[in-house]
Image (tube, rainbow, N blue to C red):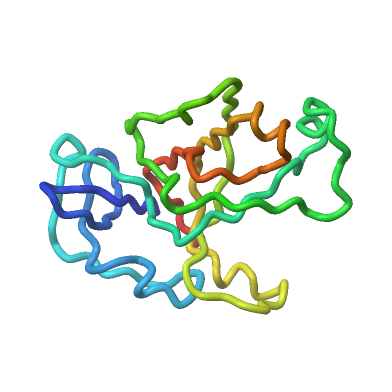
Length: 175
């Protein structure tokens, strides 16, 4: 199942994408998510893709990212492979939707982009045992992580408020 967030007129909402048709959901998928396989209720509305504007698939409170999480990237950047996960954050204000303009930082010198897999957490979680982790995953999405590498190399900062993360329109549900 492919869940999308879209605007019909000025109102943003969620729906299920089936081919070129979006069937509206009643409320947010996050409001009804209790774990993998949670049912969603359609509200009876139907929109053609040509009638709506696709938005970022969700509005996260934050994005928790892993850096240098594959060997070739660490070697390319000439940085040591971390012994523990290198975690950095991107703010929710960095999220843009499909077709939105990526606005680069004013003093950009070297901007890189990377295709990433995003894991969409569907409900609050804390101290979740590893064998229960999937129960908190609503689904998956793709996004383009855009980073200003020159400043990152100069001062070692991995999270900047003005670095965008282009999120694609679809959440593939964890079903």
